[in-house]
Image (cartoon, rainbow, N blue to C red; front, side):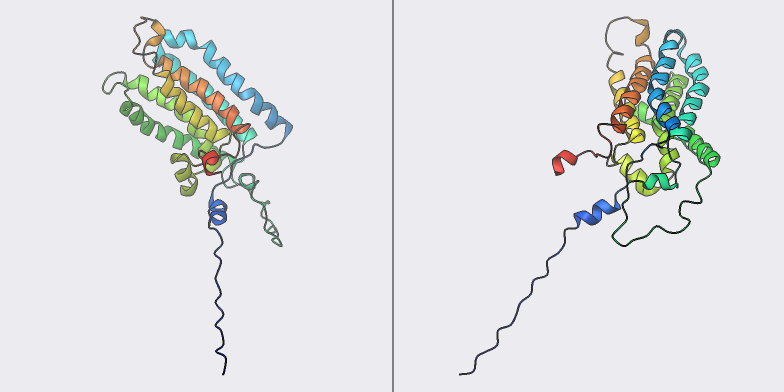
Length: 255
């Protein structure tokens, strides 16, 4: 009897798509490793909190005037911090953590040309000012006065934008991929994203004392909100740049 040849069956093993997804995710932005950058990086939170503490009594007495007069100082501090400590959008510094594949070589001249720091700074400032309008609407949706205290709310939104959004505009630019992850809370933690998360949580917690029947002068709008923004920003920036650096929301659950 003739034997019937057996058909060999091969099974294709599909590689998990998780590695491809992680390759497409944005990477955390590392601070510039120069001694000057590291010194300013560590001193920056203390300077920001000291500025707020010095102006606190004036803020309680006249919130609009104090927030308005503090804006140039806050902007100067943020600009100095980003220029000295953070890589500008489009620079090779934003890709520090991207490892080369086996056999892959760096492109010649890839590190020669960098972004224009002055242009990047101006664009980030403009985008931060424009974004303050969106933050104003967001604060109203979360319970801020709608028709009254308009200057108070907008100036509070502008402080929130300069602290939380300006460093991200400086390092991330207008990349849709980066901002989709940031707005969906899927971005990796670094000093920029950590500062934004901390400022947002701080603003939310800062609203807690306002309705309490304590009859304190500092409970008026938006003093406690601004306290939460500045405290949350400094804490989030420190945690995002150290303990939580490179991690994402949900990493513990996925692991």
